[in-house]
Length: 104
Image (cartoon, rainbow, N blue to C red):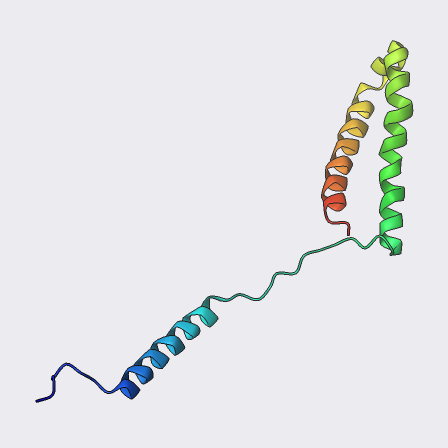
Protein backbone atom coordinates (compact mmCIF):
# COMPACT_ATOMS: atom_id res chain seq x y z
CA UNK A 1 0.00 0.00 0.00
CA UNK A 2 1.28 3.48 -0.93
CA UNK A 3 1.71 6.17 1.64
CA UNK A 4 -1.09 8.74 1.26
CA UNK A 5 1.25 11.61 2.05
CA UNK A 6 3.53 11.15 -0.94
CA UNK A 7 2.90 13.57 -3.77
CA UNK A 8 3.89 13.82 -7.35
CA UNK A 9 7.27 15.65 -7.75
CA UNK A 10 5.96 17.50 -10.79
CA UNK A 11 3.21 19.06 -8.73
CA UNK A 12 5.71 20.20 -6.14
CA UNK A 13 7.82 21.83 -8.85
CA UNK A 14 4.77 23.64 -10.20
CA UNK A 15 3.89 24.92 -6.74
CA UNK A 16 7.44 26.16 -6.22
CA UNK A 17 7.39 27.90 -9.61
CA UNK A 18 4.13 29.64 -8.74
CA UNK A 19 5.56 30.81 -5.41
CA UNK A 20 8.68 32.13 -7.15
CA UNK A 21 6.55 33.96 -9.71
CA UNK A 22 4.52 35.59 -6.95
CA UNK A 23 7.71 36.69 -5.18
CA UNK A 24 9.08 38.14 -8.42
CA UNK A 25 5.84 40.04 -8.99
CA UNK A 26 6.04 41.52 -5.50
CA UNK A 27 9.66 42.53 -6.07
CA UNK A 28 8.74 44.19 -9.37
CA UNK A 29 5.97 46.15 -7.65
CA UNK A 30 8.39 47.40 -5.01
CA UNK A 31 11.09 48.45 -7.49
CA UNK A 32 11.12 52.16 -8.14
CA UNK A 33 12.61 53.89 -11.09
CA UNK A 34 16.15 55.07 -10.40
CA UNK A 35 16.29 58.64 -9.19
CA UNK A 36 18.11 61.16 -11.29
CA UNK A 37 21.02 62.77 -9.50
CA UNK A 38 22.26 66.17 -10.58
CA UNK A 39 25.99 66.22 -11.26
CA UNK A 40 28.05 69.23 -12.31
CA UNK A 41 30.29 68.32 -15.22
CA UNK A 42 33.63 70.14 -14.92
CA UNK A 43 34.00 70.19 -18.70
CA UNK A 44 30.97 72.41 -19.29
CA UNK A 45 30.65 76.18 -19.39
CA UNK A 46 28.22 76.01 -16.47
CA UNK A 47 31.05 74.88 -14.21
CA UNK A 48 33.21 77.83 -15.21
CA UNK A 49 30.34 80.24 -14.68
CA UNK A 50 29.90 78.77 -11.22
CA UNK A 51 33.60 79.20 -10.46
CA UNK A 52 33.37 82.82 -11.56
CA UNK A 53 30.31 83.32 -9.35
CA UNK A 54 31.95 81.77 -6.30
CA UNK A 55 35.10 83.83 -6.81
CA UNK A 56 33.17 87.03 -6.02
CA UNK A 57 32.52 86.21 -2.34
CA UNK A 58 36.04 84.80 -2.01
CA UNK A 59 37.59 88.08 -3.12
CA UNK A 60 35.07 90.03 -1.04
CA UNK A 61 36.12 88.13 2.07
CA UNK A 62 39.78 88.38 1.16
CA UNK A 63 39.74 92.15 0.77
CA UNK A 64 36.89 93.66 2.76
CA UNK A 65 37.03 91.54 5.90
CA UNK A 66 40.66 92.50 6.37
CA UNK A 67 39.90 96.16 5.64
CA UNK A 68 36.97 96.16 8.07
CA UNK A 69 39.12 94.55 10.75
CA UNK A 70 41.85 97.15 10.31
CA UNK A 71 39.69 100.25 9.93
CA UNK A 72 36.97 100.49 12.55
CA UNK A 73 35.40 103.52 10.91
CA UNK A 74 34.74 101.48 7.77
CA UNK A 75 33.16 98.73 9.85
CA UNK A 76 30.70 100.96 11.71
CA UNK A 77 29.59 103.31 8.93
CA UNK A 78 27.86 100.68 6.77
CA UNK A 79 27.11 97.86 9.19
CA UNK A 80 23.82 96.89 7.48
CA UNK A 81 25.53 96.60 4.10
CA UNK A 82 28.30 94.46 5.59
CA UNK A 83 25.80 92.13 7.24
CA UNK A 84 23.91 91.64 3.97
CA UNK A 85 27.13 91.00 2.04
CA UNK A 86 28.45 88.64 4.74
CA UNK A 87 25.29 86.54 4.82
CA UNK A 88 25.06 86.49 1.02
CA UNK A 89 28.63 85.19 0.91
CA UNK A 90 27.79 82.53 3.47
CA UNK A 91 24.78 81.36 1.46
CA UNK A 92 26.91 81.13 -1.67
CA UNK A 93 29.49 79.09 0.26
CA UNK A 94 26.80 76.66 1.40
CA UNK A 95 25.53 76.31 -2.16
CA UNK A 96 29.12 75.79 -3.31
CA UNK A 97 29.52 72.97 -0.78
CA UNK A 98 26.55 71.22 -2.41
CA UNK A 99 27.89 71.88 -5.93
CA UNK A 100 31.35 70.58 -5.04
CA UNK A 101 29.83 67.43 -3.59
CA UNK A 102 28.03 66.88 -6.92
CA UNK A 103 30.96 67.67 -9.20
CA UNK A 104 32.22 64.65 -11.02
